[in-house]
Image 1 (cartoon, one colour):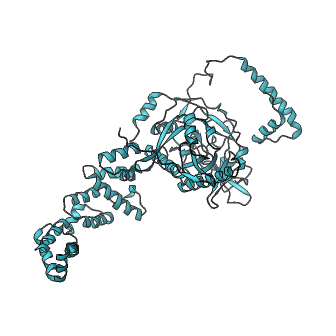
Image 2 (tube, rainbow over the protein chains, first blue to last red):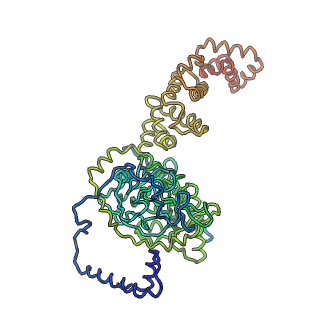
Image 3 (cartoon, each protein chain N blue to C red):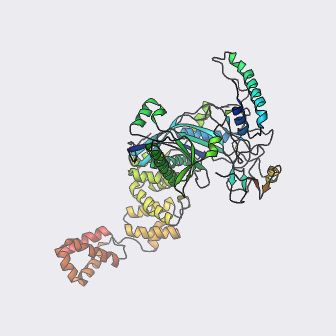
Length: 95
Length: 503
């Protein structure tokens, strides 16, 4: 599978990563290489084999429905570039 | 199990400039799971808390934090599935739905695209007695809710509160079996009723515990039947999704205006674009959410932080054993067991508390009489006071006591209403109040006869007229009731007056 520059630009935009136009050809090529490497796996016949979901025979761990966390507004907001009145403040986003 | 039979409602058509059109509607209802803590973190789900105070590091998507599933939320989803007579998938798994928005710190929502926990079920959507639409449920999956952005606190900034981020939602997806705006609203009403019976979601639309996305398309008559036959969506029109509806009224309005918009486009020779739209109730129109379109590439993939969710049939069976009697069954039992009309049974079973109250009143009594008193007197009185049944000042035992006094002919129907008012406002034991305040019905024919004789003697002109026209006897009944303070037994009064006037 080959990734063109347009697709690379789109993926970057969806991920909100800024990529300069001159960097796009190399990025697209890198994507193509990675996908090509992964595509080798298609050569393996996995007919009738259950997908492996874990390397350890483990069951999904479950919690009981108890409040054990939270009440730490200050810590939650500590790394925010801008926070006011207990809220994260971000550039206006409105539909 | 008892079942009531029903027929499908007529399909609503909308007249276009050229022909009639039919609607095809599918819904996705997001119902917040009633739980104390979030789906993948131990933070509280409480509504209305200080902003960003119900947030764990998992919810804030701090690096290295891992989600741990809340078993109770899984149980609630299974319970909901069982309540919708749906198939429960013992194997389900979580996927990441990737999109960028300020109220979604992770940059993805953990959801279940490929392997939902609940499969196909159904909801019987009641329209009127004997008329209902069977709407198939395609799936229910568990997912995280997003946070909340507030846009009106600052002219240039949006303020974000992630308290709701990570709260467990059940997304309940219907098949496109809904055929009109009224049916769509009735579907949400019925779903909410079932969820409340089950106790899996409080159904509060104001606080956002229940929200609906509505998929609307239009087609010519006959096309839907072809779709049902073949399963081929090509027979239907292109659909638009109206997002985030949280009132029954707006759901109906939005469907109506959206269908008309689509019809106008098609009849003018245009093409409907499949897109996400928002309903603006002030303008009475839907508009495209372009930003949402761009983000529609969700790049789903299995969440590597979570193993598949495998549950055991025995656990599902245990949950099934704790299921309450559901609205349809309760209604059928009320109709058959208490000899009620389907309408009355619907009113009484609308919520589980009303149903319980009625049953406590009706137990061992005349069901119809009990239904009349609960619906007409009690519900009316509660409504006037803006109270709900759980805060009723009158208990089932007290109301039952009033009904017993009517049945025993101790009080008349009219006095019973006065008695109801006294018990409602002052409390007390109905029988004792009747005794203490001399409200007993006068069945002593001697006393009634004396009153009748007095009135006849005082009103010779009326007597003459009544002898010619027996219908005028009603006037005498009224006079006697007045003279006895409403306590005379009306049956006895009628008989005595008829006899006296015939003399």
